Amino acid sequence: MPAASIASTMDETTPLENMLAQMERAQEYAQVDPGIFERLKYPERTLKVTLPVRMDDGSVEVFTGYRCQFDSARGPYKGGIRYHPSVTMEEVTALAGWMTWKTALVDLPYGGAKGGVICEVKEMSTDELRRMTRRYTEGIRRMIGPHMDVPAPDMNTNPEVMAWIMDTYSMYEGYSIPQVVTGKPLSLGGTPGRVEATGRGVAMITRKVFDYLEEDLHEATIAIQGFGNVGNWAARLLVEMGANVVAVSDVTGARYDPDGLDLGSLLAFSEGGGTMEGYPDAEFISNEALLELDVDVLIPAAVADVITTDNVDDVRASVIVEAANGPTTTSADDALIERDVPVVPDILANAGGVIVSYLEWVQNTQEYSWTLSQVNADLERRLTGSFDEVVDAYHRHETPDLRTAAYTIALRRVATAHELRGLFP
Ligand SMILES: NC(=O)C1=CN([C@@H]2O[C@H](COP(=O)(O)OP(=O)(O)OC[C@H]3O[C@@H](n4cnc5c(N)ncnc54)[C@H](OP(=O)(O)O)[C@@H]3O)[C@@H](O)[C@H]2O)C=CC1
Ligand SMILES: O=C(O)CCC(=O)C(=O)O
Image (tube, rainbow, N blue to C red; front, side, top):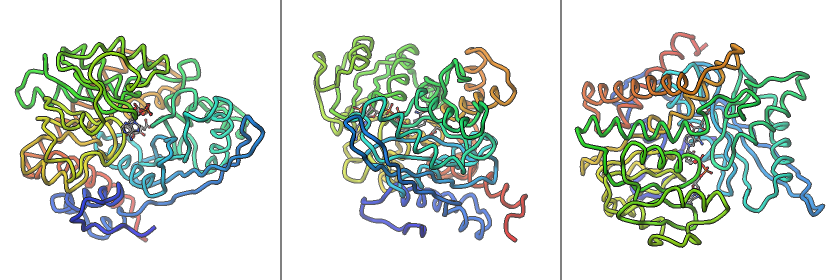
């Protein structure tokens, strides 16, 4: 796939165009070898697989899946698998690129990858999902492996799906290989702390940015777009830290209460299959209106490209912490830089997930297990250390924003690996 055009004045940019524009902006400060920089605009490979699945009614439905391996100079490819109707090869490529910069930024011995299947999980039974997952695993199994490419959960995938992937892969190899995926159930080699790790990292980073800005997180108002794995754990942990979560959403819309939401009741309602639209308390507003609330912190924790030139002037939050991958377009970034609104970039803010995935992989590889407090302490040390490095790079290189500082670090690390390995024959 050719690298997408980087120049864009209209905000109709795709996630891949945004990722390339983010790299381009950082290259001004990173100044990595131009040949290596050119190479880093392209994924190493992307596999497209066709997945015929017998549905419960006896019919056959044919799904399409992808696995993109973006870069492996620093170690095995690493990155989640997404089940969503809007999955495209282009989006998977951008997400695999972001994984490459994320693992480099938080200094894990990994490269970056991402997978996805175009499907609507809400319309599928558990049996259909399991059959589709097994087909998908069979399709990509020659490219994954504990030292080759290690998948994990992303949107609409969870420990149960990871267990099916681990089982299918292991069946072909002839013995159990838990470390082929992370985010597994605890009884199959999962680690304590992975389910909540991304949300916990988002909460830790929010507290860290408040310390950096010398602001008090206690009673700070927070709006979170997305109430799935990442959004709901971030909300719970931020409330534990004393913050006031005033809005959360799912695909149907958002619930808003300026005095603070009853998270326990919202969680119980959504775990019972309820939607925000059906929730009986608090004001019902749209996802778009949530993004424009007058709050201290906005946390997009759902899909990409939600803060764009179309709405950025109406975004009133004082700080943005990107829990989702790619929620802000490059042109919206320009407006936020102009207005001095700090944005903690996705590759830092949501890195808690892959950090704890790494800790799971290490435990599996050593056949040794850690306690939850060991995992959380290691997560905090790595994540807050990376935040400090980004802030240091921001000041030292005088980058326009934290994202460019983060990319400067990541680009240099990946480029150094390419240089040291002599990857250019
Ligand atoms: N899981 C992880 O460990 C990691 C996830 N991320 C990123 O975090 C984000 C969320 O992932 P995760 O929590 O795992 O996913 P989930 O599938 O658990 O939750 C996604 C949430 O987003 C909502 N949503 C889906 N589509 C839209 C939409 N178009 N507009 C508004 N809300 C929407 C969903 O609503 P509904 O339930 O109604 O569909 C749900 O509340 C993604 O960008 C993902 O890439 C990043 C790092 C790691
Ligand atoms: O845990 C992992 O390996 C990757 C999680 C992920 O997909 C992400 O960080 O976007």
